[in-house]
Amino acid sequence: MSCFSFLKTMMFVFNGIIFLGGAAILGIGIWVKVDGGSFLKILGSTAPELMQVVNVGYLCMAVGGFLILMGFLGCCGAVKESRCMLMLFFIIILIIFIAEIAGAVVVLAFSSLADIFIDYLGKQAVKSLQKDYGKNTEITTVWNATMKELRCCGFNDYRDFNNSYFYQQNDKQYPSACCPKANPCYDSNVSIEVKGCLGAFKHFLTQNGKILGGVALGICGLELAAMIVSLVLFCKIGNDK
Image 1 (spheres, one colour):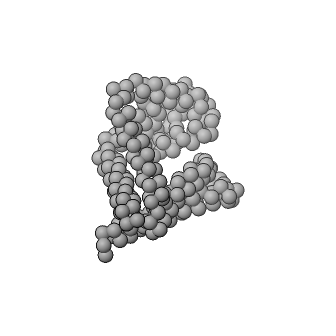
Image 2: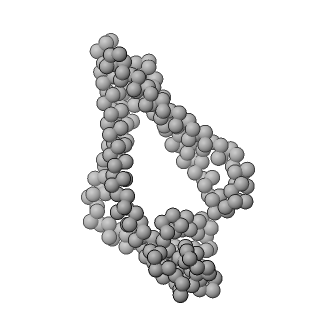
């Protein structure tokens, strides 16, 4: 097998996987939206807080459609040796790659402003907890999911709930996430092991920073490889013609 044939095969297989994955994600999104009635009934009977998951259908359809487009351009461009499709595939991947690099540069450039941003975010988060937690269903669901996943309570700590709507309406109790080993949850039995969600998130980044960085580098590597292969095929087809 020649190098050109090998590159065509790899391009077809790689983008074929992307195409099938996009089709599966698109199908899930369509099913969630079309069959949303029965889906909501199932969720409502088992876990009411998960009913918001149905809104993910739009995101699934958008991501699935984009992956299908990318897989189609890559597969057809390689099989039919279409220079137009290969160049379009290369341009889309290049735009995504440049956007990722620009995002990384912006994050590094404004890292000195992180403390200011976190302080502002903290004020808004605490305001949301005190005003809307226990009153607004969507905000309550998001906070409950966050506190359960990160095993945290409040933004800074459990005292963010002091004098909140939830605190006043529930006889000065805190959410159950603040007292994983006690119920009901009062100030006297709040677990000292439960941190604020800000501290828990920082701990998560510290523990998983290398993994996240490795995944990001892997994605960038795949994008570079896809661009190189598509460009090589593009040039090779042009020379043959």
